[in-house]
Length: 541
Image (tube, rainbow, N blue to C red):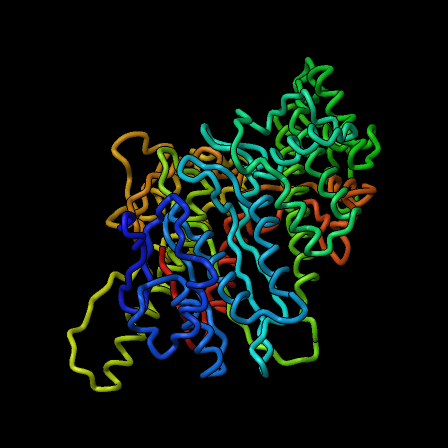
């Protein structure tokens, strides 16, 4: 296949692609025009991502209905690259005088920098899902704007990366850029940062594409400086460590390096140092209907609170950047009617040597997408053949509803039991795992491993059987940010911009739904609104 650059084939209405792991000369402007100018002969042309894009564009014109291009597959299969080629195709055939299509494409380098990272399978793995709507003028079919929604950001990567993996690209890009351009106020040079792991160099450490894209999208100097300050502050925050005092009930900064890192963290974010240290090592506790006291934290709890705070800051910055991009991509003529083609690029199915909460959430999302795929490719297509009286042999397919029910059913689905255990004062990963086996019968879908069943469980997914290690599930699902720390950030002269038009609550008790429950809402939003267009072009990688 690769020798002849034939990496695509059709499987019914689905385009299947092999990742060549190299650049191929099959995506140039000539190829775009070839697929766009041979509409009547499209069915007889070679399979290509451009054929899928042209089919979506043609149906947008002919049927006046919105379209979706769904790109799915395993981690490292080439989904993000395929999505970018689809967007490039639309930008080329439907460019406008306002050059809005250049801004649509410029969103890619920015989102890759803040949302992609090196994993054991992929040096540029998307650690979030995105759904981009490219808006077309209903009258002349020219691009008039765009809008991006993001899902399932793997923010835990900010504070922890598995062996052989890296943090988000933006951290390494800024360190390299600061050194070359003498950004001494960030204090990133000649320092080791805990959150950078091995800090091995890759081709994704170059910040030039990120900076160029910000210029195209009209980010001003204040926006750029805010991003630099926040990224640098998170790196310094990751070097803050606590040590318990003699009674083990309260804590203090572990050493001089932690003090220096705290000072840099506060200086970069414009925070008061004493207030910041106070709310990192203590918190408010309600003891009655109205009585509130300040209680000290031990070192372990303080460290957990700091990590939750840094993840929260990164997530707020991420969504703030997305809002800036959407503002720049807004329709050039807001009052004009438009249609859209959506391009969905979300995590691929993951199966590693050690699978934790992140892989569980990613694979859950893929189960829901697989169900959408089954429904539209097999069920609806075959129903249409029956209505039209076509003589053909029915194709059976595996319905993965049982796996989805296992995960999300109330009250004894995996997610519900996880949220319940997170609310228990003495709840641990081990007690949760034990309750899973007591509440959920084992069988073909949910299985107990022969060894280490006290700390792991098995799910038979549509793609593969995966063993999940329960260590860290409760902590990652809670992900509680304390109200005092939110109020602290709102007083920051830098991070306060993230809270404009924001309704972040400062309620003391943790939310009823953990991260897993909120991810369920995100996944249902993808399935219920974005993918249910009348017709779709699908690319499965």
